Amino acid sequence: MTTYPTSLGTSTADEIRLLGQDLTEDLMGSVGFGELAFWLVALRRPTPQETRVFEAVLVALADHGFTPTAIAARLTYLSAPDSLQGALAAGLLGGGSRFLGVTEDSGAFLHAVVTDLGDDLPTDDAGWDAVALEAVQRTKEARRFVPGLGHPVHKQGDPRTPVLLRIAEEEGLRGPHLRLFEAVGRVHDQVLGKRLPLNGAGVCGAALADLGLPVEMLRGFALLARCAGLLGQLAEERRRPIGMDAYLSVDRNAVYVDPES
Image (cartoon, helix red, strand yellow):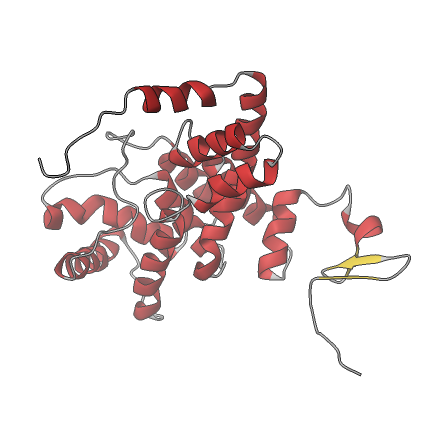
């Protein structure tokens, strides 16, 4: 008999099991959705401290106003109001290297550096600064951007960054990825010649990596958070639509330009 092993969900005619638990008896009403999302990926139930940091990340990434992802979702809903799932998908598909995807890019960048250190982790800020300086220098020499630096709106400092650092510190979860991220913030101008803020997506990636979550999955958590925000954007589009105005503003102001000019 062919079997298909899973550590996630199974069901019979009268029972649903998830993560080895009875869904209705053990989980419903007892486990928060953020806690469950962590558990589904890590295959271990997070501690209360981990849950607080993890859910702070989800809140930080849920919505950021009229971002490209929100606009894409609203305009898709304008075009196909019969397809809520299409509008949500349109917004989620925009999570890439400039918006949302920075969470994974930052986590992966930091994790590679921390992994190379092995057990020889710095014990103070000066040690982390030296590691960060070398990492930023290598990245510049490779003609790549350092993920987690800069923001198109919060040019003087992303308000999410210090709050998430504080929460991680309060919960005893300010680990090597966050410490390295902070060090990058302190030293990058020595290499790049300018000072940029540590952005919220980047600090979220560092925090998720410190929780031990696989860095290859970090963009998924950003998208999970943004899905809630997009659902809110679409609910507001129904109540107070702006999609048609956005479309007409672009369309009515389109100007033909000779491609040879």
